[in-house]
Image (spheres, rainbow, N blue to C red):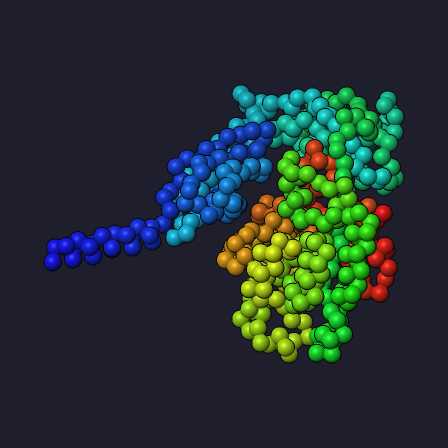
Length: 471
């Protein structure tokens, strides 16, 4: 009897152990580096995800700011202010739940010393690069808690006029003159104190590595068989035969398709880039992607980034049989997981529940008049968190990109979505994003609020493919 009881006790212990939540993080450190908070933590073998929250000392509630993959053990928070105190909280999400949290505090020094503000140093321009035939990228050595005035003139000793004020140490000068032969000087501002102007530097000074990536935008792919079955040929649909011709043209002309993840890695100093990259993006997650586009991508050994409308995918998954009666059928999560596992299609987000043309005065994932970052950021964070939850549950991945619904965006919405956790944003075909149809990048400038927003050209049916790609 004792042996039986001992065996039962052992089984109970094993069952309890199998269901234990992950252990709390062992280490969490925060340091101030170049005006940003750098949060680091110890790696845990139990972690599928590390989840990071932040609150200012006077706030009651934490706000979610970041989910990392299991092998990422640091995060840089660039949104800290002089004189403020921040508390960061880290949780480990594992197979059996969420761990207890570990907290760490950062006190950002006040720029005032002995009642006086500390004056910024004389700025140093580190590079001036012609990104394309319209745009110059000016990079400055960063200083803590500074904004920067970028001044421009047509001659070294000319009359320098204010071109822009930025809170990042980069300026993307797509000026009205659409020229790149300029001289630049920069002034740093901290509080009420202003530095002298930097030494002038001309376009071409220590120029960085420039590369271009055209981004194509598709939506739905149909055949005559689909139309006969009741599928609608909407404004942005193309015939599957047109898509196949596009892929053939790209291969014939030396293009190699890349994913958004590859682009992010390269801008972060990892990996390589093919000689002629192209990013094929597809919006919505319609069933035609599974039936028509995916087989063609596999046939030509190419990749695409598919932006999913979360609630539409949920509806299709819950009622897959209803698709036979729908003019606009969507994929299920199971079909998306199959495509994702093939490596031919990278899954990104088209928002979880914000793909509505009009809601609360907003259009899609953009801001409305009167929105501030404090108002819009929680909306973006909530939708991002919901999208991450679905991606992790069904696809075992995390969305790195958000494609703007209806191509509607503002600089404020860009800031909010990038702060929520996305690393790239797919915009529309507008010169407000980029004057050039191709997205050009300065690799040394990396990812910032400007370089992270990509212009996409919408492929329209019945038109020559060469109208949609800059050669």
